[in-house]
Length: 189
Image 1 (cartoon, one colour):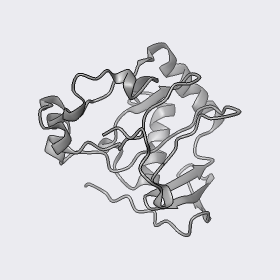
Image 2 (image 1 turned 135 degrees about the vertical axis):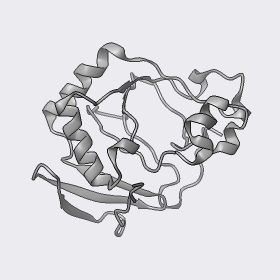
Image 3 (image 1 turned 30 degrees about the vertical axis):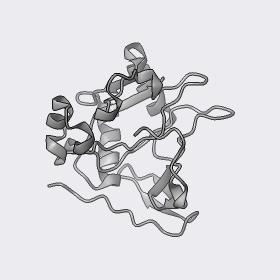
Image 4 (image 1 turned 90 degrees about the vertical axis):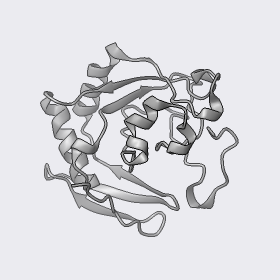
């Protein structure tokens, strides 16, 4: 029921080809062993990225942040300046096809996934370093967060990123602890 995401990483920099459910091959490249960071090339088709952008763009709004107890009273913009929209996939054949590929790749039922979180970062926007899971002890006074994660029993296992556009410089996700790196200066405590 819960599934298990295990793509055993190989040596950093190594790559392998995997067959997607639609018959295409994708390349999985190991970027880091600790923590495990993988890059998957050829996962989305150009028309799918255009579809996601078209569907989400009218609904993008300034991103919020689930503040930890230690950050009460701070504004979201201190940590995050992007815009976002959680794009429902149900009833959209193109998005359901992407969901099926994600499910196959992750080896976890898509029913355990959130909607596609579409993010837009304009020039100089950012999101400070953070974890994508929610540690219940950090949100002890936040009843809504504790309820949504069922006191930590329901949480994020892994994160799948789709890059929908490319820029000449910047625009990437940084994993500061990858390959034994130190904690980032702007880590979101």
